[in-house]
Image (cartoon, rainbow, N blue to C red; front, side):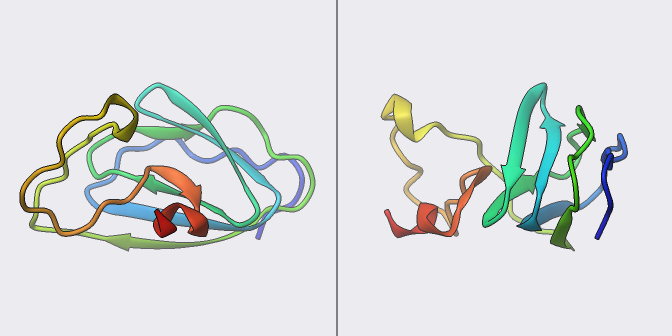
Length: 104
């Protein structure tokens, strides 16, 4: 939990991070893409990629996060480009979304 004006630290981690917002808006950049993650949304931060806050939060900010590692490689695909999905995959996780993202 943080008060008004929180800016996420700039860092590159050796593990993956999944952040789920409970309150407020987290302004965070990963791979040069700015995200504003709000209540009920999540963001997946990939191991080895720099991420940082690009704008201070307004008001209260509360989120849950988990750090985890995987021996399986990550593949970045775009569902909008109609790319063929790999024949074998463990899980498809949009980088930023809501729980409804999983109901496709």
